[in-house]
Image (cartoon, rainbow, N blue to C red; front, top):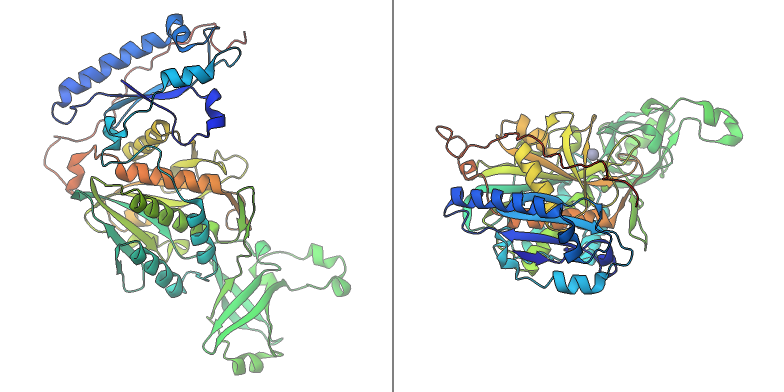
Length: 501
Ligand SMILES: [Zn+2]
């Protein structure tokens, strides 16, 4: 039995969280049956201990109560007793920590094989620098070449060989101990945008959106128009833009893409002028992101969906290289270019890839369980539930490594994961989200979520393969096939639980 201090916690947060205990049961791979028996016996023993006052007193709590029940899970062949808190009044937490949580060699945990310390550090400066650089490169769907070039160059700088599909989806492999069952992480380089629908007689441009977003958020935006002759600048305005002319009508006119137009900052008085400028129907329009990075960690910008996801992946990769994290199987770093129009990862997944984890935005709107902090583990989107086993593993890895996590379900949402499955790839899928407020509008996120997701990506990629038959796309018979057995729930509640003392 070994004790770890909770990874990812600041020293000043220690008094609230006593510890995370990991019991390495060892030899699981050599003799799974014995090891599984040992796990259940130990689990039973610990569950009993948790209800004994003696155990609490031994940990230093005079009142003999938990403020939050400890949870016991089995993750990667280790028992994980996570984030249990004790009443703080009078408890000598400082001493307790040093006594109860001696430093432990990370290799003691079967989760951490590959030499990875559980205190993986994501470089926030690198992450933010990548995000700023990506936001500065316009990349609405259909106009992603420069963002692809930028990202491919960075992946090469980080030592990966980059393979591009014809249109520019990126697949970069980082070799692991075995080729299969490989793991893929995916985010998308394309963003929302607009396209010219019509050259209007007044010299302005009618637009259609690229991707699904409200024209309300387009009103007032600055934009670039990519014509055959080069780039022009302009503003998207409601048809009745001037209060001095239209008075209260500026507030009562309808909203929608038919009720806005793009005013080009060039001599464009009519259709002829527009044609002379080289502006034409179908030209792509990119909306300025207008990013703000605040000292308190909030980041406000358009297109955080999904440039923040790309930055998270690059930051995870940078950390893995810096800390020389080895993985049990090859990992594929995928960046797609058509997610906002629904085709995302349809043509970039290889047969080696058995599981695909998308990194994309969550939505922190009312009625959602997403948060701007920690990891939001998405359990389902409009295409249905994500993979049971993969979601479970990711959730447990959060518990085992002190990463804040909440689960959410999205009604009107799809991601690269859905497009991969719909294209016929039999991959397990999951979605790790960073909470975004006003998604597809003027978005806001917090650095805390980005760091949390990057950390989880590293821990996931370094963790052992649990479903070995995933190495093949199909296998004969049930040997090694997964279970979704549901044992009867343990109900250890007593009438005293939850009462204030
Ligand atoms: Zn999106």
